[in-house]
Image (cartoon, rainbow, N blue to C red):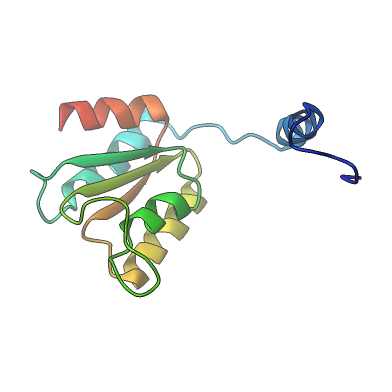
Length: 128
């Protein structure tokens, strides 16, 4: 039960840690698959010369996609409109979901996702 928990005590952090530790972990994709996914993602930007923003461990891409939203009545995007966004996660299912969301939101030209480890993603970004 979460009754009586205050966020000023270490108890909620222990509860979160136990919960996260109990979840099954997904192994990172094979290096060849990760490299192919990263090459596809990095090659899909309309203008590869723009600055690149990385989200390592992006999951379903909610943070990166919310940053990429254009300015409007709901709120302005926090990332400048002229940059490329790349999210990497070890789960191919989560990155496929994020790719579909980016496509539906019309941000697929600047927000791309790849199933790769953080190390592979950083190496690919550094070499691009």
